[in-house]
Structures are given as C-alpha cells and as structure tokens.
Amino acid sequence: MARFVLVHGASHGAWCWARVVTALRALGHESIALDLPGNSANGPPRNDVSLTEYRDAVVAELTPGAILVGHSLAGLSITLAASVSDHIGALVYVAAILPEPDKRFADLRAEAIAPIVNELTERVDGLSVPRADLCGPVFYSDCLPEDQAFATSRMTPQPVSVMVEPVHFAPPDVPRHYVICSRDKVVLPDYQRRVTEGWPKDHVHELATDHSPFFSDVDGLVAVLNAIQARTM
Image 1 (cartoon, helix red, strand yellow):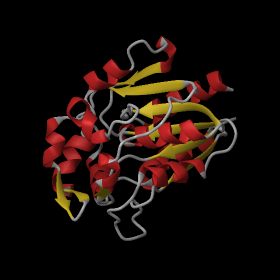
Image 2: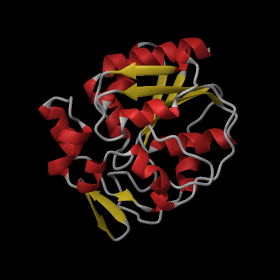
Image 3: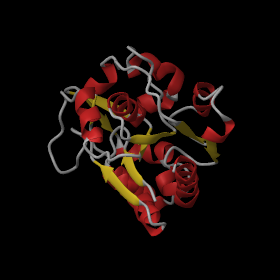
Image 4: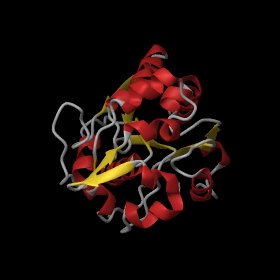
C-alpha cells in the first residue's frame, strides 16, 4: 500500500482533505495532510512566507515512494519538493497550477485563473483575505450547502509572497498525473487541459466536479488516487 501526502492550495489547510484521508486509510493506505506555513488556522497569518518554506514543509513528510498530491496553488509546492527529494513515487496535480521554471504564479495567473476569483479576495498587509460570503458558490459550486459553510468558515488569509516569488526548479524526473476538474470555476478547465497536452493518456484523469473534489466527489477522487498508486507500486 502507498503513503499519500496531501497538500492544500491557497487559503486552505489540512482540514480540506479530511474525508480523503479517511477514505484512503479505509483502503489500507497511509495518508497524511499538512498545513503549509502561514496557512494554519492554529497560528497568526504571515505575510512573509517563502516557497522554500512551503517546499521544506512538504519534504519533511515524505518517505520513500510517497505519492504527493497537490491541489490548486499546491502545484508549486509539490513540484519544488520533487525537485529536491528522491522519495517521491508520483506527483498528482488536482486542478493545480503547473509551475514553469523561473516564472511566478503571478505570471501564470491570467491564463490559469478565472477572472471572477479576483473579486473574491481583498489585499490587506501582504495577505489575500478571502471573502467567505462570495467564495462558496465559486470554490465549492457543486458542494452541499453545509459543506460550503464548513469550508468558507475555515478559509484563511493567503500570503501573497509565495504568489510573486519566482519558482526556481529543475523539472523533476518523477511520474506525473493530473486530475482535471471539468466544472472548475477557479482554475480554468481549458488551462488544465492545455498544460496536460502530450501527457500519457493514462496519466490524465477527469472528474466532472467543481474546484473542490475533496468535498464534492470524494469517492471519485479517491478512486483515481487508488488507481494511480496501483500503477506506481
């Protein structure tokens, strides 16, 4: 069985993976989700977080053969971790940003992120502060109302620093998979399909879900992850 390390995206935390962790463990897998620096609901917001801190927090959770799963902005974190660690069996990008060497997320934002997302946050002292009243219908558009309320109440300010820092890495030599979320209102589905053009067909998976399949389609997401580990082992 596999060890899955689950990494959250902007303004989220380990909490968003709770149901996926439970479902993977029920299949016999070891599974862990982590809070990235500056994103934990257990500490004060930070506006000075670096991508190196993100990378090192992920690397600290790896053991040989681990399957590293990144959602949304965590595409940066898992790619950086894979560029410095030889413990990774596979990378899985879930509706995620694929970084380009020496570019910033800010350079990719226009092609990757739906324009409406700009209206969902406010910039305050180097932090992107989510507006909970607006995020629900966009981030969690296919989710139950109670899941929208649960998630939006836990979203935290996102350090802008990691969005404007260049992502320096050498492309890792690790099997890559991508989970396209075809009903995504945050990371454009057209972007998700474009960045995976030319990938092996069995490494590109598609779910008819919103941006948050860890709520809206736990069974579908876990089935994909389980199939990936079967190929990786």
